Image 1 (cartoon, helix red, strand yellow):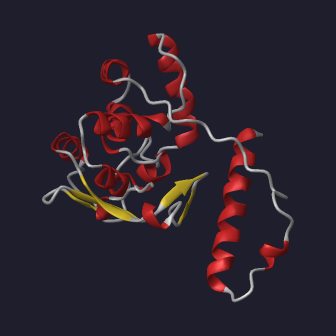
Image 2: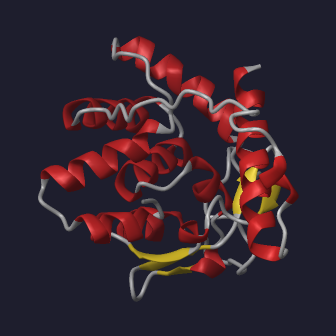
Length: 206
């Protein structure tokens, strides 16, 4: 129920925003103030670097390689789950170490990304490039997904997130959403003194 409310909230707010950009008179401006209450926003709650390394170590030793690679990619790129699951090989340039995110995948469907800033080309860290090289099939087409499950289908991010919580329980790490791997990347980058504007552009956020 909570997830459904968040989805409806995001869709409605995007509709109001886009209506104001596309028509001369926005009818939504006639609605009373706060007629749609803003849902409380969670504060960023990243994993520590030590927790990140323990999680990755567990996946590397106890889970299929595709699962380990997916978690590793999330921790070291700061991507949203919907962006990572939608990534195709045609959007990855391993020679230049770049990846372009222009599609979001949720509930088995692909759509435009969350915001304008979400549509971006990012620089991949050398360790991420090496990881992707290890995943690159011998025969690949541009439309093939980078991250697939054991049956070759695109990863179901909701199901994967549930299993992720099981890993946290085994490791006795405080529960946090799988989405927070993104917060971890941003937090570590800030701690290392990376330029805030560059981090914002890299992760497609303000």
